[in-house]
Image 1 (cartoon, rainbow, N blue to C red):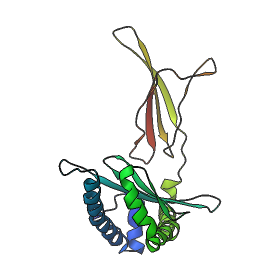
Image 2: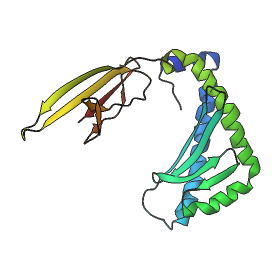
Image 3: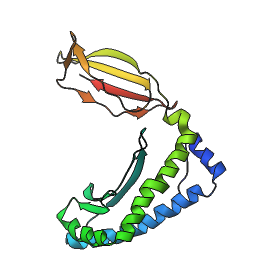
Image 4: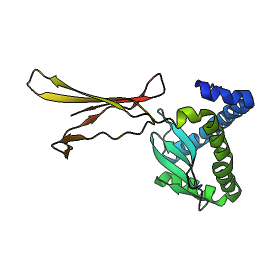
Length: 206
């Protein structure tokens, strides 16, 4: 069962109590669907033993100018496998073993049209609903608070640590400058992690 954990997501249950039941059923159906694909792909690779995975990812986006974007793609053992092109109603195979599946799916135009309708209509409707409820969180903008510290190693090497926190949205680009010039060099970027208040924190070493 899919359970909403964020407060603003839980508001959607008040308006549409069956929404998450629908999402749960979709995930269960996709699980059965992926199981069948996994067996087929394993046969193509002649893999009768071992542990293998089939992944599925789908999403949509709405640009400020009204243009709609969307994607649906499958992965196998962590790599790209096959992806849907909603503009041409065809599938793009990322692996030789996916060619047969591509040809079969390309012939199934009713299914491709359903995918296009899902990405451009159903998914967009859900996106707009979530944006309406989560506007304060999802569209929140906060300037990062930055602190730079120094750490000396036993070998006499100096490492500079830059910690940016309290910013939103999640996307951030941190560069080091010396005398006005950008210094690339050896840089280590940590993972952008969420804070309890909905903002983010990021650590960079140089």
